Structures are given as C-alpha cells and as structure tokens.
Amino acid sequence: MNPGVVAAIAYGILAIVGGAIGYKQAQSQASLISGTASGLLLILGGVARSFGQVWGLGLAAIVTAILVIIFTTRLIKTRKFMPTGLMTVVGVTALVVMLKNL
Image 1 (cartoon, rainbow, N blue to C red):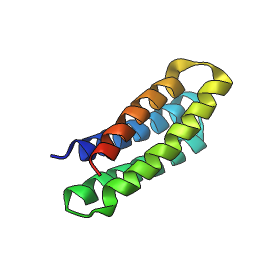
Image 2 (cartoon, rainbow, N blue to C red):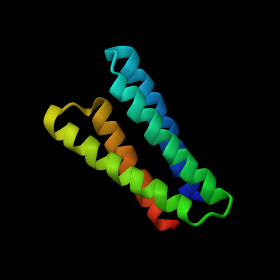
Image 3 (tube, helix red, strand yellow):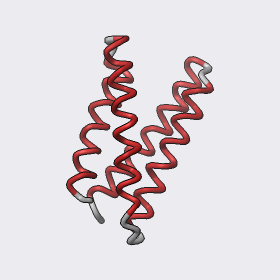
Image 4 (cartoon, rainbow, N blue to C red):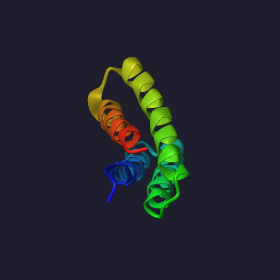
C-alpha cells in the first residue's frame, strides 16, 4: 500500500478520535464536528487514492495542510503541546509523506 495512503488514513483516524476526545473533555461540539469532518475527508482521500483516483491524495494533502496551519496557530497561542503540538507534528509528518507520494 502507498505510504501516502497510510498517512492520510492514519491522520484521519487521529483527527476523528481527537475530535471525540475534545467533545468528551470540554463538551466542544466544534471539536467533534471539525474532527469528524476533516477526518472523514482524509480517510476519503486515502481510500480514493488506493482505488486509483489521482485526486485522493491531493485532497488529503490539502486538508492536512489546513489542519497544520490551524494547529500551529493554536500552538502559538496556547503554548501547550497537548493536543495541538502533537497534531502539528503528526500533521507535518503525514503531509511530507503524502507529498512524496503524490
């Protein structure tokens, strides 16, 4: 399997789980909705690419880039590594893998 596909799906699952945790801990519906939406888009992109759709990994890379920007901004504001720093580091790693496999 393409490493970019694995990165997209793994980051998508992490986004969904993170959104659910954010909802459970802070009752944040925004975390739940954004985590689920972005996670599903990432998984969709990874699955589409695994079925030969060239646009799939591009979609996942765009969503990942947007998430990296959002999490970096939050990290700068809060200066707390968890969860924003972790999502930034994992997002940058996933983005590099996706871009190498486009």
